[in-house]
Length: 311
Image (tube, rainbow, N blue to C red):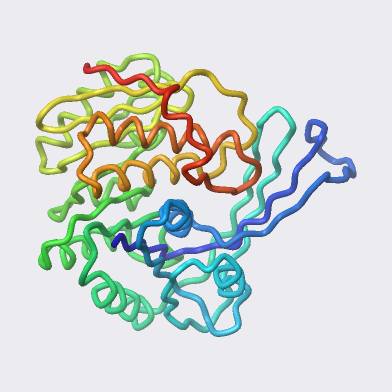
């Protein structure tokens, strides 16, 4: 069982354009879809599509369209009632794979609602092998909130994956309660190191060095996604890079979430770290070949196109 927490979920609206986006003009889209989203929900969708037990935890009031979308996909979830609607994020996807995202900030969680969310998480994760804390925090939430939640989960012996950015990332990494798994992309790793994202993508030695620093602080796995250059995994036992053969991207939305899903599927099935990394990159590469916010299932994977090497 894997439990995901999405404290700031979204309805992800994607419009597909057959021509490049033209500012200040009227354009017609060729397709439009709306799916239940937010990073943790995306992770749960991919895990569910793989046939593994998962529960997505999120705040959403009764009758919210978010719940309807979750019900339509038959995704197991637990919603903590809140007095506001789930936000809607807009993705504009162009034919060449270029994506533009416009994200609403979402509503603030009251202290009581935030505590209800944590209480529900602790109740739902009793049988969980992993708990994934994913995405941005609601307005008004303290930047160190994830650290507090991780502390309560670790007290119960839970392995925790964290995928976030900005102040919630930097505050958590600087705090006392660290996740078992951290999954930054190059932009997020740059927030922690001060290096430029493009510098990290071009210099794997810097990525490994940053990962080793985080591992030395007590994080068991550092999984860094590097776009077309695959991903790097750093642990106390070694470090590896996995790359997929070049693909033609359709949409990059949710690729990092799918990468995290693949890794959690691998390690929770007791695969070797190299194999789990290969599965993670296969999931991320499959995601960019799918339109909109669609997440891959095992039939979409081309694991044979992934190469892994020790660094």
